[in-house]
Image (cartoon, rainbow, N blue to C red; front, side, top):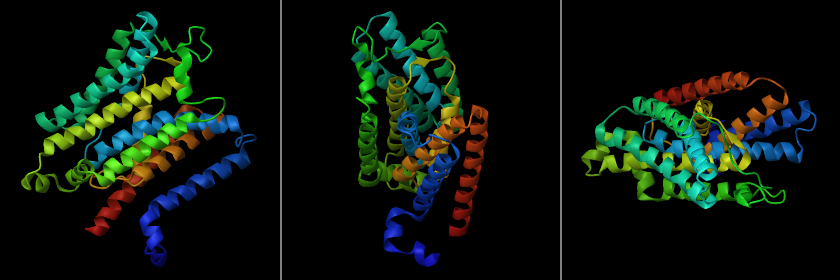
Length: 325
């Protein structure tokens, strides 16, 4: 086993990520064997629809967790963005492009709000994100007068459904191209820029970074801004894949996004993050969700399994840190 772990290629790809990818393939094979028609194009497209919005949520929260923080508001923030932008589109007749940009701006503002309170005011991330979660739920409900919001279909006679091409065009998963582009950009930011290095260093030893003369508040806030912006983009992909958004929801996606990060090798203690690992984790969670739905199990079953996954991988992370120390 040690010889395998010390292999240069395995080291470069990451032993844990390789194992997680094998698990993903085994899961897909098992579901395809057990469930008739699971390997169909329709099922694959359904899995990808889930991957897109969950992927953007997970990519964003990876930056926050890398600093040693946490954000439990991303799911409700995504729904708040979708609700407010969709209500503006339907009620006030705003152009679709304005509604889409509005979603990103709202997510950006939530990110600034969270980042400022954590980095500059010093409020613990757990408290800030729990408060913001409730604010996002309430704001979305108040803005839409507690009504659900339906975004235009692709067949809408006014032509307002063009944004659904972001996910699929004539059966081609264009969303996968856009998602892959975002993954590459964020990978470069995390691993090849000053911002990414400082964000990771904050999670390793914030005080040492501060004493070296770095403005830790600025970089810590940036992580939350990225996270909030990604939630706004996730909202766009959610409404592009689905139709109706209901107020007061989104909590479950917090756990799924965080589980994706932890499975992919991002340490809950901060200082260690993997964009590629997060992506594999997103596919695992999305595949699990589709498999459970195909087996006609309830959403609650998936919540139980996701919770157990988080516990197992966090325990593995804590144990690895103890052995290292």
